[in-house]
Image (cartoon, rainbow over all chains, first blue to last red):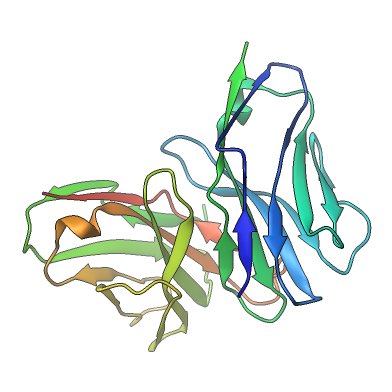
Amino acid sequence: AQTVTQSQPEMSVQEAETVTLSCTYDTSESDYYLFWYKQPPSRQMILVIRQEAYKQQNATENRFSVNFQKAAKSFSLKISDSQLGDAAMYFCAYRSYNTDKLIFGTGTRLQVFP
Amino acid sequence: EADIYQTPRYLVIGTGKKITLECSQTMGHDKMYWYQQDPGMELHLIHYSYGVNSTEKGDLSSESTVSRIRTEHFPLTLESARPSHTSQYLCASSVAGVNHNEQFFGPGTRLTVL
């Protein structure tokens, strides 16, 4: 069975600085997707970034980028130029290539200080 | 505007009551999901549906039941609520072949059973 581990329950960063959130996963599959979701307080969870395992190039979305290390089964999220609106719970998630079931980590609460 | 809605957002009820959590989406998505999220914990899939009259149990055992009579509507029912059902319930939807089956989440219902 696949598992997702987020070892940082809480992280903090100063506005305009860069922060990296860690995620490791365990799987015996070769084809899968990895995601980072953002859940602001009392607001809807939204997809931040997606990585397909067959792609070697790391995904980027504006200020958000990932460091995908397939052999090490590591999938970290880097947030550059942090903004107050980035404060939220961030969940790392795994999905097998041929299913729709998401497997989530326990989340990292990110605080952003002015 | 296409979206996914959940009502109520907050619910406090007594033990033994029957409750239904509503989830509706206006995006025409064929797939819908229910997740359970305890405070500070990861999301666990409890039910999913791939279309009208199709429902399946997820990875986490749940005493709740679901129905899918209309494409846009996926309600979750607890026949007799207990304190152990206290949690946040998140609904999501997706459509095959769009953005790698990306799941869109509702705002959640926070349920407290006294």
